Image 1: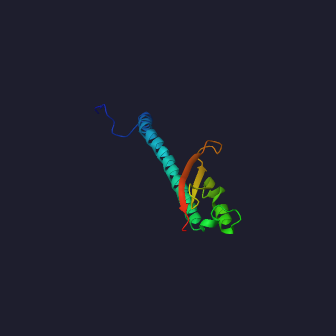
Image 2: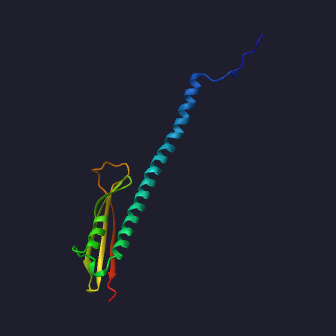
Image 3: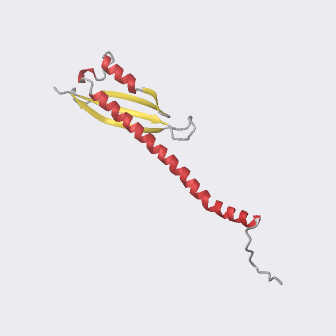
Amino acid sequence: MKKHSLFRINGFTIVEALIALAVLCCFLLPIISNLMSLRRISFGARDSVIVNSHIFSALADLQAIPFSDLGDSSSATFTSTLCKYDGSKQIGLLTIETKIKITPGNDSRIKVIEIEVLFGIPGANPAAPKRRMTGKGFSFASSM
């Protein structure tokens, strides 16, 4: 005669498997949620680096223009540089809107450049408010 034990040796029932799956889901859902948040933060940081690089590239190109041509719309060098950076541009999957403003400084030998860039938040609706990154107060002085 066989003795019946409380524990079976031959496997799991479907109810036990479903309970194990439910417990596993309770642990995995918060982890997956955190991973999705980290991904969004990572994309936002990547976009900020791209925009920052765009601002400093514009500044480097503007610095290469002769001081007398800086801000002169009749100068071909200035106009081509301005067209390269000013306005709406697509960099990879990122759409940025750049505004470049050049004003005279307190001294006639100084010009001040301000660059403002607007760009979207990763995964957000295109109509949503945009992030803003600004480079203000970059002064260029005449070598005279």
